[in-house]
Image (cartoon, rainbow, N blue to C red; front, side, top):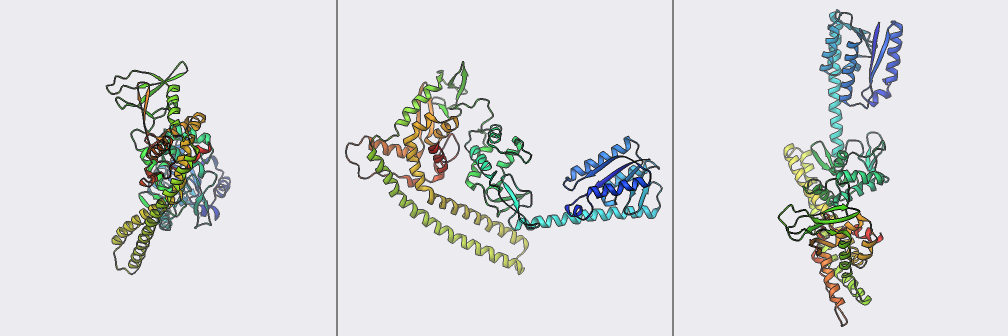
Length: 525
């Protein structure tokens, strides 16, 4: 007689304690041989399969048996065949449809068919209920374990791209994968510039070496999910619950927030086959519309798109724009070497006030942090003593935790500003002196980044460029103009750089604030 074998292993523990798929197949194959049964096909579900996959295999098996007129199904035990009432009903309907059909549960010495005795059918019903209870209990224990792991600050899931798992069974945590983490971080930094569509970023990151576990290119939806995951800035998101994570953040919260702004911004770049040097960076001086770039006979032209009423009809060649920019960069250069020393000295003097300011703010933030931590400790003690309700505990815990996270972010921001502030000022100055050289020798990406760092806005009026500097370069430009035009010895130069925060350096076209690493990378390039 024709028969089909069905095997299932639903957990790693079962596989390790003798319920492995090969062991089940061997047992059922020997039984079929003793009973002179011909095995047409084997259906099995591995422990790693999802619930949807298990249901799909079960449904395929039922359809196969109906199509091939298989009358006997072999299974190790009832809970190997079904663990929910839906599948049990399907299996029971298959039996009741034909008197010849049977299900053999080999280890339990139980054979179920249409004319089986009431005691046997009663065993069948009881075993189904017990299997269902086992699954419900298993699900409950899994959820409890997940909740406890979240409470400890760890995400109860496989490691995210850029992280790996370490630790013993039951105490595994996620740590940074030094091979992939730099690529994931670069992915966030590139997208935050606002210069790349998701599709373009997929291509760039694949060429950089970012791959899936199977070595394939990330799809666009997968990339969008990664960019939306707060796990990378130290926050765990499990279903609808948001908790603090103990994993080492790969990026700062500020960068993550900027990426979210770009993701949900209506002006987020769309994929384009051509990546023009000035695409999206120049506006029409008359109507404010973006300058459109086209290539004709090997020459790239820019012109107003005329989406609004506008009289500008001049088409400007890309090299002509570059030529005007190079002259602009010349205006940022100091002609007298001695004056260069005076400007750098002014930056150092200005830095002292900035240090004092950040120290004062950090002191106050640390006091607030200690107060919030004490409140959390008292809240926990009140919960243990049953002096407050669970609802009150949850509400207060969420409130205090949110305040604590805000303080931590502020501490990190001011700590970074305190240590990198002077380097930033020096790099702004050095970049201004080498802007012409960097622009002339840089690739398209570096040129666009340089323009975003220096200019808040660039407009095209017929064939002439009008521009405004970003705040730091506007201040520096004023100081340079003063020194270049001064015939007498300059003893003091005031650079009011302390009047703006690091995060306030606007890159209007790039949609991200100036970072010291941006400047350093350009200077190294």
